[in-house]
Amino acid sequence: MFTFLRHWQDYRRFRRLPRDDRRIVFLSESGQDWHHFAPVVAHLTGELGETVQYASFDPRDPGLHQGSPRIQPFCLGPGAVRIWFCQFLDADVLVTQILDFGNLELKRSVNPVHYVYMFHSLISTHMSDRANSFDQYDTILCAGPHQAREIRRREELHGLRPKQLVPHGYGRLEDLLSRRREPPPVDADAGLHVLVAPSWGPRTILPVCGAPLVATLLDAGLRVTLRPHYQTRWQTPQVIDAIVAAHRDNPRFRLVEQMGESDSLYDSHVMITDWSGAGQDYGLGLEKPVLYIDVPPKARNDTWPELGLEPFEMFVRDRIGAIVAPERLADVPGRIRQLVADPDAFRRHVADIRREWVYNLGRSGPAGAEAIARIAREAGEARRGRG
View (cartoon, helix red, strand yellow):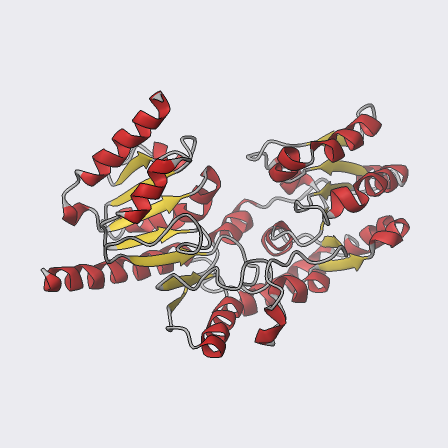
């Protein structure tokens, strides 16, 4: 009850703000959202001189603890308060990364609000998400041209109201590029560090072939870090525990479950994953190869082929690495040795892919911030005109 009251007090504090102070509101589902919001918020509150309201469902969200007078924080918690906040929001612009706004329990406000969606990965819009996940937004900040093509194609096929599509970019990629470092040199298999970082769900690597995959890598003399998705720990912890129990005494095996941990990303030489967007971040941001285990694609939209566009996560797999079938795990160590053989050539190759598929590389923060500030000005003018 005390926690609910604290969230309710933050909600009331937000409602008491003068209306002109509620121009730009960021709404975060978890602390992970801040990593994507941060470059945009920094430019809005810095060079553009804006003040933003930052509301989050997660009390540990770094965005709530910035200590900046231009970032006003409000913790709504995971319960009913967040539903009321959304239902009765009175603001010019809401910026969020929450999918399916208006389709599930979080509804568009009874007041006129301009809804802006920001992507938090490079994956396509039409296979891994529901067909109508983006229909309720007014503006989409697109990470790359493929997302814009997919959204427009769906609008054309279903006669939907055209949205504003902003060439934004992908700040996470820029952050990885700026922080990347060379992994330790490899002079033998024992120095070759493999990061196993799959997605979650019943048809992903760990439940399908995780135990034999890790055993194959260790038997080949490679170092292995297992970095399961946090949802796997919640939903099927037994698959993680079985692998750990089998290899906990092996000095070349390590388990990482801390979400903020980064050494395994920077110090590994290759990633093994399935359909996770983390593979794209690793390959295009850290400029290191990815080996994909060819489990069935994660598709929450069975009608995705109607767009006639190959999803980016399908297109890019063999361009930033290699694909191995689950029944061919014995081939994995050899494919890994091939992938890491010429890192300089790989970097040149992924640089070409980035230039073609990612907007505004190096300036996504300013691009997103300027678009949001423009939308807020236009929405404010329309509001004052109505008044």
